[in-house]
Image (cartoon, rainbow, N blue to C red):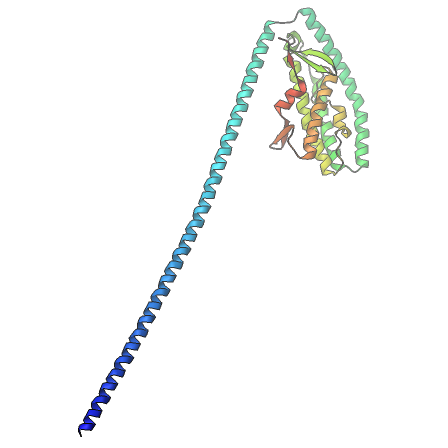
Length: 308
């Protein structure tokens, strides 16, 4: 009897120990799961933190690039504004110098005999120029026929536009009633000299302005002629253009000899053609579709020397 009781007590103790062991094992497993879950949560938090940091770094980098571009743009705008201001200041100074020269010219009027000599030369120039324009018509027709034969459509169109501008100029010349007595060119003393083909010539501000116009018009027409040859995929040759050989656009027959005007027109034309054909801005620039020669290049071409 005692033995049975003792056995039951031992068995109960054994079962109790096993139960406690199982409970302990289960609790340990639960703690491991909790710790693993915590680690997973921590890893996820760390990953999200790193992703947020990367996003922040990327946004900051983009913002820095945007700020840098904005600073560069502002710097470029400041440089351009400064350049424009310098150019305006230079133009103002040039205008002031011209005004002073004109005032000096008015104070140093030519004699009646000298004025009459200039008027006689002028009338002779105008008469010769009108005859020359009539002779140029047949040459223009021959060149137009050649362009059509060569199927140079763009160059043919350019020549027609050039001739139309010259024709409008002829109409103005024919209808012009020139007043020699009131034109300051004929009583203003020369203030410049210039060298062409080894010979020096003198002129006043009005003649100098006409020669400047020759270079400017030449550059514009040369640029247009080059664009036409490029559109036609034609080899570059500025001397091949009728406008270069004619070189009369902008000339009215007044103030300077036609040979002088033609010479400086061609000087501008050659440079305009080279810029236009090679798509560069070595001698001029293009703004709003209009080509114009640089003032520094214009000054170099004319190379006026002050007489006083």
